Length: 405
Image (tube, rainbow, N blue to C red; front, top):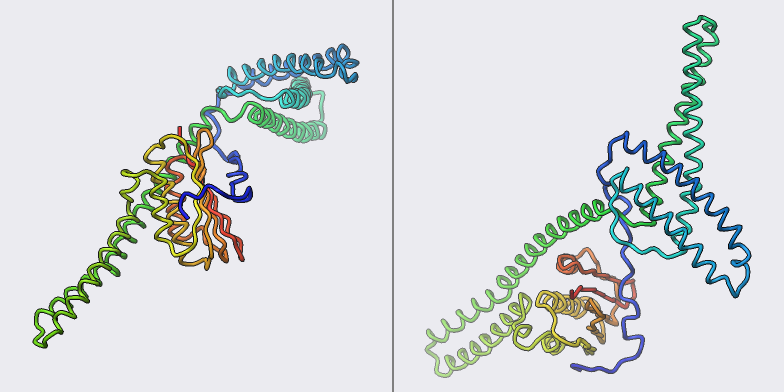
């Protein structure tokens, strides 16, 4: 049934797609000079001391109010505001001495307090490690002075060198680990830096461009195969029928052959129209997405129900991508799923278009197949997302998010 707006709550897409996981392997921003970073590490030790003093003072002043339910909310807000100011200071330190430029991001009060507590802990540890490093440098100076005064034996000198080298190695490794921890905490609280976001975006665009080129090539090959194996063979058969009708000497046989050729020509036109619709449906330009999806439903030999709720006009690339998601999903269901019915939902949620196609078939759809891979590429080229869930036994659910703004 076309345009059927009725449906149970289970037919509606309860949750389109999960949020995108952050890429933990994104390239890091360009490093600042070593001396500048060293100054930033020392200032981080200072800000950690400020964080410790803040928690001690704020805990002493606000502790009782945090325990009392009637004042807990206000006291928590005051505590969070002070922590947020220290967090802004630490963010400025990261930007000035480590060249980390973070996008505007508003963290929750809980995230800010968690960051400040973890940052204070790591900063105090870093202070201890830096202090041990300074103490080791002083001992190295005393050892050097002892060598020049010849007050040390070779056995004592060798022992001191071995122990000092081991402690220096452990100290430097600990310092590097704490600096890396500081960087990770900043990214978790403030988000990835603008450089990381830009590099990630460039990689996504490069991957989507390559995927689109591959998808266009696959689609071109499929069109050529449809024309060669379908339309061309029928045209050859039609030419043979017309040739036999022209050469026929038997009365009435020419009329029968012409009638058969007429039927064949109608079938050729139908198949040619199907190929043209798979390339690009003209109904999208003339009638819009809803009518084009109605055409998909009419050409499918499976009972299809459509729920369409899209107020206003859509951008042409979004309409085209939504149409091909539905068309490919319905075609796959008709060919491979043994489904009895198909449900199609196209709805707009604020800034994105949600497309869902669910069939009652046997499942087991291969997301790596050429058709579904082409859909992935087509959707990704528009910064959209495609999810395919097809467990053995079914049902198969294909969900797409397409940004409209």
